[in-house]
Length: 248
Image (cartoon, rainbow, N blue to C red; front, side, top):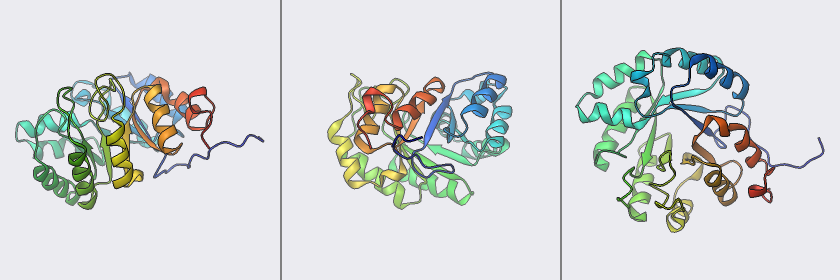
């Protein structure tokens, strides 16, 4: 093909990561999805506490392993175990599924920075990859940019594998205003002070995905992508859609 398009790194990727939300799809449909799109799905996040109520999660995790797709449980489940002082049980729960990634978040609870750093060290010592989410799910809570930068820098220094910027599935929290607009000043501070290759930006809709691709580049790491947006996201990454037509 003679078209000149932005290059997307092949798997296993360190940048250009696409993390997809899984909300309880049946295993047959899930296998069809992963087998067809495994080259453009890097990570599946079993959102919220779906792993507790979905009897097909174990089977779907094995499907991910078969097709070279990483997976983990959303941070809200971690927070539920934490709220009941049951982190030992949470580690046992995660291990029972053969999952190698754990997310630490405080999007619902107020867990201090020092507590989260301590938990990060513990999870790393147990052999897990650790992703740390920054930002609150509370629409009324607006963290100052300095707080974001301090936390993100600290977590990377302490050994976090990736940082995740909160946006919720609605794209109206965390890095986003309740109107759905990006907090431009905060994003500029993140781009200036944080290693972007270690950040996964939650971008739950095509508009937010296009924004990050235009602002950062086609190899930006994006999360909370809907399963039905996987192919269109690749289209956007390669400048084949109006919204990202001029990227290179």
